[in-house]
Amino acid sequence: MEPPLLRCLMILLTGIKMEMDYDALLERGLSKIPEKVFKSTKYETPQTESSVIGSKTVIYNFKEVAERLNRDPGHLIKFILRELATSGTYEGSRATLQGRFSKELLDSLIVRYIKAYVLCCSCNKPDTKLVKEDRMTFILCEVCGAKNPSKTLA
Image 1 (tube, rainbow, N blue to C red):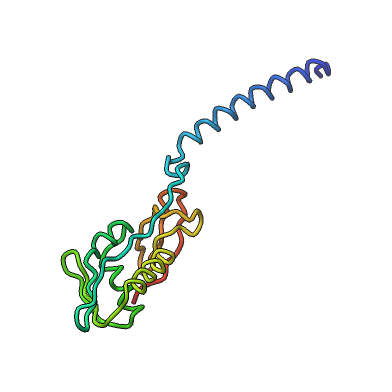
Image 2 (cartoon, one colour):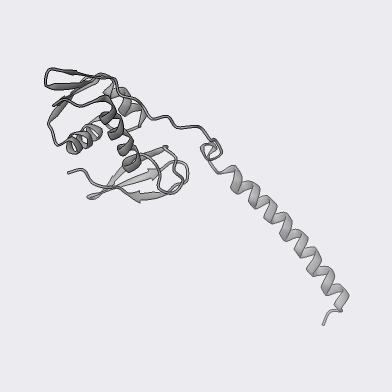
């Protein structure tokens, strides 16, 4: 049996050692967090450059919009065509849609696409990528590491 004073001293010393270990662990943990987490940049929605030619609508900067969203242009065109209930094609850097659609409508569709397939549900940052596992598609956040299921495009 050890004297109470020695016991208190040992508790105090182990507490100091534990506190030092905690600080070291905290520093190590903070050093492993990506820098993207601490950056607060304002995300700007890419705007479409489009015009109506006869009964068709042409989006001239379609590839650029898809690249700024970090998404496959095929996935984006599939979403737009489904939402507009029309047909269309994607060739080179532009997309052609059957029908007359305003720039405002196309920009609002891009915003809806961003909310559904680009922004992370947990941290609301746009640094995500689509990952397909079996028949499910997930939105994988590169900032916080969250993995959320996304809607499938048929």
